[in-house]
Length: 447
Image 1 (cartoon, rainbow, N blue to C red):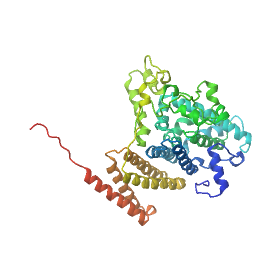
Image 2 (image 1 turned 180 degrees about the vertical axis):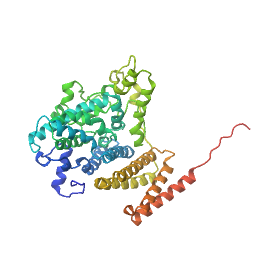
Image 3 (image 1 turned 45 degrees about the vertical axis):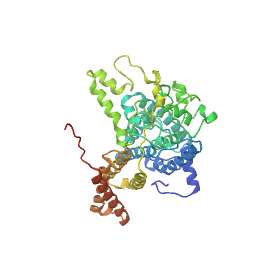
Image 4 (image 1 turned 90 degrees about the vertical axis):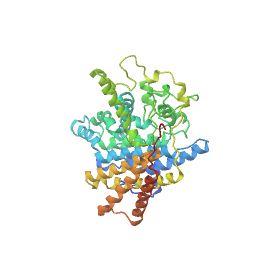
């Protein structure tokens, strides 16, 4: 893809795209003077995300494992689009403070086109990522957002995309010290490369990587981080490098005897992205309201997730519950026709998201807001279908009707005849489905 996201077919471009996933990058090709010149490498890499996930699925199946579950994989992609939808709404506002500090308070003027500056930026971003990631686990309100990333009961590359819509806002403050020296464009480059690298380390298809395990974050190290077993809590926070964990005492190596159970300690089973994005924030608010003193209220928000007013034990110090190893993964088996329907409409939403990404900077904020809300609403309805929610048929009917109405009223949004008929037929189907399945059930009591 080019700067705007269009597809490039050059083999060298493809090789560069793959290299970015492993931080194998030529510094000379990724040095930019202005923030506006920095491509959105993250969105450009979505085709590689798909490709890697397909390869991972094949490898897992060859190893006799289940592979990537469709419902869990879709949920991960949906949460990834929540993150990107949020970024389109605030149009990089979270980086404004960084740029302002650099322009007004920088202590040194490092040359933007220097390889030394590029390397210093890479090291600085990774160091700050460690502390940001650690804070997101050890500060309750930040964990309320970051926990989205840990909600999957599987561990695969799709989990690398599963993020909170507010993740960028939760972390930006930890990078601000870099603004005293690192040019904003260099910061933005490495901020993206860091997340691209962390995509592929979410996998069980790769075992240990020999000497690389000593200084790089690897799938082996990150598997421990995603476990809900007590020995997995609050360890291995590193991004690209694992050395920070070894320096600051938060490292734990994976052992052959480890039986890692993925997901949250108190799992909230659902494939609905809006539920996964919001349920823990509601819990933090409830804890805040529960206490009567301001000291307790503030600690419920800013202390560790395990904090209690008296005699609390950190999660990592608790004995493992024997039932943890018996926990059954949440799964819903849909009819084949429903799965086929979902895949077709999900593909259309993915395409719509891609089109919005390429056009959103030329659209008004109100238009972007409307499009993003519709797309995120669509992903929420799809999640409810995956959960087999009783409300899903009616909401899917409403979703189709909204699109049909909007595209009929706004000439610039008008669909071609095939697309119109597709959505009209979908709406008719769900209307008939809802009509035929709504039944007034009565229970007779007495004589």
